[in-house]
Length: 305
Image 1: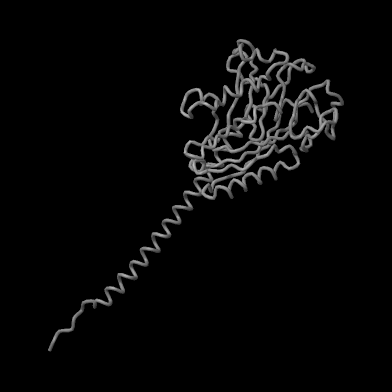
Image 2: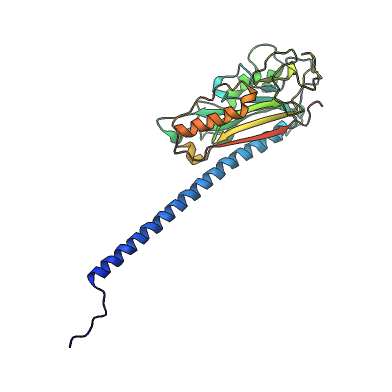
């Protein structure tokens, strides 16, 4: 009599291998999807971190904004949002400039010129070379040559003359000159609007002119609590609302198309403009998953009541 075999038949082995293969495929799919989700979450966190750190720096500089001692002076440094004569390369779509007691040296006074804007350079031939950066203009009074621009009547406005120095377009991203005004990568757009003491957008100058999302402290402004009936009295806004569209550094290298951010000249459509740009950017660049919209309201501690 033959002994009964306890081994597996060929069919049983093949079935076992097939089941094992299916299990391995499922496991690897789960691992891959988990890795993708984790990577996407990290990219989103990086985009949010970039915005948060930029807001912190802007808020530190901006909260102590000052006006000239002589408020009737028109050739002194003022509080400016979206000056119309700034080069379009630095209006993406908004910019902001002012003076504040930020100087590290008080040799010639503690005031410094400050400003923020976005520089965008899309390199379609090699997206790895893209530059989407928040740039900071900063000049102390001890730098008498540059600060002397403030006392010049007429000619090129100081912010227009200095912006290229803090955001050179001809420099390699890795040069010391390029890092001079660098704040952060992954910033695709900057939106700014001024708010009055009640939190409403400032839309009219004291003379009744539509400001079109700009601001010039020499023109004062109208609000429900208007204390500035003429343009003879400079004034600061009570709050500045700052919005950004950011993405992770890895996603910045995946962007091959930039939608137009327009001029965003209506403060009432502040959020709509931000979200429309981010949505169009995501549609044009589906591989960039971390595109994020962030907003912060910054109080001006030195504003008039």
